[in-house]
Length: 456
Picture (cartoon, rainbow, N blue to C red):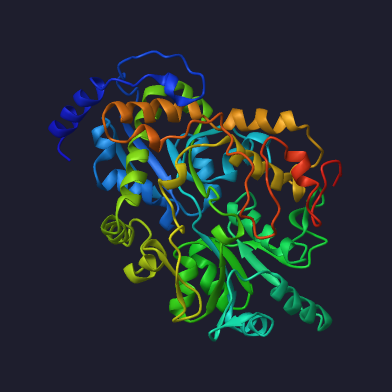
């Protein structure tokens, strides 16, 4: 966009009035103020080639960043560690991140750093895929209806395969994308719900495979199908389009989507360093405004989703075929080749308050870090909330959202009235309920995994 247009957009931004913050439900002061000019206007954001980078892509392609007086460039990153490191050292101003990354960095699991988020990029969006050979064995143990497997597919069927492999002296291996990834915790949750131990992280076993029935290892998302086809792994959990790619290539079968493991789970966030957020408060609000608009646009119509698929298929973004991306971005999901089923809640970007950074979401990830030994000692319930508050910034989100309400771009009902908790949540594949206010009570409900008082 021409510089004259950017200047016009910046003028528009500086004269935009913020709505009363008191409507946020967070008890913020009811002050009306004009939005200030961004402290930093030229920004570089990183992303990984997955369909859930869509809010960044849409905000860029539709000019929403420009509307906020921002000159943004987007840059694909090699993997999640490189992405995090480049945010920490300032090469990137912010990035599309795994929901667990800011939390893991804050508590010092892996790379220690002060990372915060004020924006949740989407709900759902992952799936678990197994090789054709493993699926053929699993299928023998599944109930059928109309000649097709009944969904959701539980890991009970996989346990029978793994047990048979053990008797033959064979090791069952699966891939996930990063130790603090949503994928790691979802895969572990699904396996444990089916009676399989995915292993523990210990001081002597940082791979997280201690006492494991299934060995999990890190594989970059785009390499998942080829790694499974080569036989290095026998299944994986990853975001799109890399499950659908296995179907198109004929090398594997997705068996379950993550919204069937935990309904409406937060998948990615937009992360920045705490120092960047403090130095650039107006810029941060402007970025979140643009991203909220992008999420709203993505969920507004099927026509918008189809347009987004075309954007994402470009080589500088996801770079997969349109047909592969569309398979999960347009309300359906294909399991076995030809078994395409409705999946309206796969990749939600705005509905169900998808963009709001709930403390209870952060606490769920912390419980899973504790469950599998990444947090080595018991912590009081208060620690979980304190940690969530260090990382999640709903006050920044609400300043952005209230400004958009004042501008007439979103409705007040699009924003939750909340203290940061969703309440008691159901919709988990094992039937266990989750209350973010009682993390230790939650941990004690699981048959497999560390209890609240256990030590690694």
